[in-house]
Image 1 (spheres, rainbow, N blue to C red):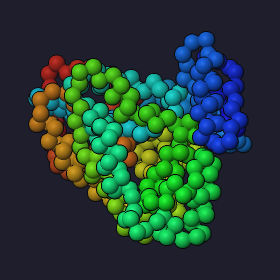
Image 2: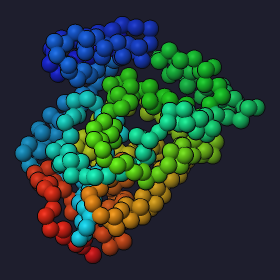
Image 3: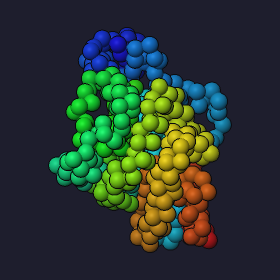
Image 4: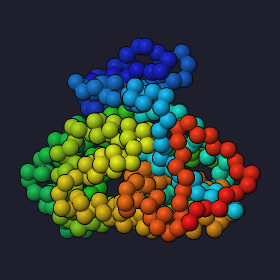
Length: 354
């Protein structure tokens, strides 16, 4: 049973279906179809579990900070010919998390180039599917159940059944691919649409802007699916252990992002990554190691005239090993943008501080 409400309608639209995935989708569809005008609809309950909405997180932030200014996950770097906005994103957001801070939109309006972790605008679906299968599938003589053993296989099967999926349909997939599938299903049924992140928001209104990438899709897929088997299994186990905490975890992450709270963002990201030695190793590769290469490419963009908006996951920006600190070590000190600050096109470029 799923329940959804819309921003323009007080009605509660419910769908009682055979599995959570269909129930969630149908509740949202009913909410949108029965509205007098187009509206953003969000889940508020899934079975007996209350779902946190983006609007409620905004209200919570407002109750804590009121009109008090706070930092955003945005930094401005500039020199005589170039302005670069480094913006930290959340890859999935509830619909009522929008609109974004006006500073994000203003930076986008000034930018000629949108720079993402991966160029999502240039991905061919067939090529993406082929690249995924090359990395996500086990060798022909192996099966998922062989890798997981009977106990873990049963636990995975139980969770998949919530979404109407038989584990046999994933028998050829690596544990890492099953982990990604479970996380995606859980987020979607909690009301996080697949195309709801900051990156997709800007991609939907490019209007002739160039799109560049800091990484290739192959590099990201290699990182996700080519980890040693013990690491993949450990991450799957961590995911199952945290499965019922996802709403709270995501809410804390989004709230930290809205508040521009670097330490809290990093702490929440680490907590979601898991506590095992294998999870910590993966965390270093996922965040710390990639930050180094990203920082190098972002620094190089400052040699390219124009205005660039760089959007990366917010956790990449924070901490002693984050991109902001790495850029500073390279002699590039950015200006943190705050919630009460206007962003206007620079008439006279100021040199980046050294």
